[in-house]
Image (cartoon, rainbow, N blue to C red):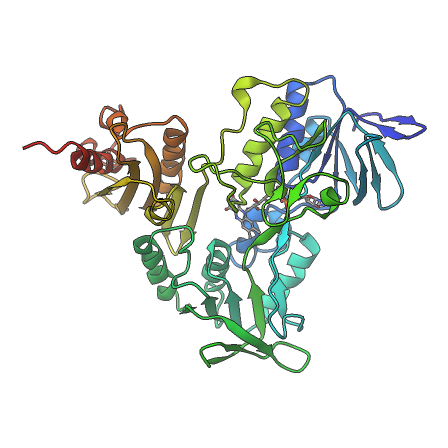
Length: 461
Ligand SMILES: Cc1cc2nc3c(=O)[nH]c(=O)nc-3n(C[C@H](O)[C@H](O)[C@H](O)COP(=O)(O)OP(=O)(O)OC[C@H]3O[C@@H](n4cnc5c(N)ncnc54)[C@H](O)[C@@H]3O)c2cc1C
C-alpha cells in the first residue's frame, strides 16, 4: 500500500473513491492506469467484498459464501490505498470526507460508488425471524446460507431475475420446496416479451418450483418466526424461510445530506461524464441515475456491467473532459441462466417499443447452435430483434434464448445498437462459422432475424 501524507486537516489523497463494489473497483483501477502518479484511495464499509452477481450461487453450486469473495488483489496490484470504514459526511467546500471513527480524508477528485440496498415493502410480518433480504454482505450471506440449508419450505417474493436465479439454485437442494410469488402476470416480464418469459417459466416449473403469478403477499404470519404466508388470493403457504427480492434502491442518503442533487427513485443526478452538480464530485454505478440510450429517459437499471462502464467513463474524465468518452446512455444488456436455458435481452423489447409509441419492426429466427444438427449437444437458438420501421431500420433491441453462447451474442447486439447498426448492415455482416461452435452460415439467426424484418420493410413482388 502507498505511503499517505498526513496533513493537519486529515489524510490527503488525489482521487478518493467511496465504495468497493464493481463501480468503485473499476473506477480505482482505471484511474490509476490513466493517472499513475496520482494517489488513489478507496474506502468501503465491509472488510470482505462479495461478488454480487455470484450471490444466488452460494447455496449449491458454490460450497460457501467464502467462495464468492471479490479479491482485493487487483486493487493492491494497482497500488490503490484500501481503507475499511464508513463515510458519514462529505464536506464539498473543504473537499473532505469524514469516517465514522473520526478520520478525515482530503481529496482533489471524489467518486461516489455507494451502490444500492434491498428495496422493502410494508407487508405485515416482514420483520419476523426467517425473512431474509438479498444483501451484499459477506457475514449476513454466510448465515443466510445456513438458514436455507436447514429449511423445508421457502417462499421467494419477487420473480425478477434475482428471485428466479435464487429459485433455480435452491431447487438443486434436496427436499426443499420452493414457491415464487410474483405480482405481475409472469416471472421476468419486466425484462422480456411474453414468449421469452413463458419459456423461462416452463423451465422454472420443470424444476418443481411453484409460481404464484399475478398475486401479492397479504401477510407473513407466525409467532416470532415466519411460519406461513397468506396471499391476496386467499392461499396460505407454510414456510420456514422467506426471501424478499423485489429489487433495489439507490443508496443516496450520504449524497443527499451533502448537498449533492438526487432524485429519490433514480439516484444521484449526473451528466454524460458522470459529474454531479458539485465540482470534482462524480457518481457511478447503482447509486447514480441511468439514462436510456434510446429513449433518453431515466431507467431503473442496476447492473454490475453498467456500473463498470460508468466507472471507466468517470475515471477517463476526472481531470479533463474527453469528448469521445462520454456516457451516451445505457443500453441495458442483461442475461440469465435457468435450468440449462440461457436467455437475455438488450435495449428495447417489443412491449417497451409499444409503450414508447415507437414505430417498430420485428425480425425473428430460430436456428441450431451447431451444424449439422445431428451433432451432439446441439440446441436451438431463438432470436427476436426490434428495428425502427423507417428507411434507416436501426436496431433498437433484441432477445435471445438457447445455449450458453447466447450470452456473448447479446453482447454483440449491444455493440450493434451502440454503433447504430441497421438491418441492412446485418444483411451484409461478415461472420465466422464452424460446425462445433456456431449456427450454419445459411441460417445464422442474427442475420436471418434481421432479414425477416427487412423483408417487411422492402416488400418486392
Ligand atoms: C443477487 C444479485 C445478483 C446480481 N446479478 C447480476 C448479474 O448477473 N449481472 C449484472 O450485471 N449485475 C448483477 N447484479 C447487480 C449488481 O450486483 C449491481 O449492479 C452492482 O453491485 C453495482 O455495483 P456498485 O459498485 O454500483 O454498488 P455495490 O455493489 O452496491 O457497492 C457499493 C459499495 O459502496 C460501499 N458503501 C456504501 N455506502 C458507504 C459509506 N457510507 N461508506 C463507505 N462505503 C460505503 C459499500 O460498502 C459497497 O462496497 C446482481 C445483484 C444482486 C444483488
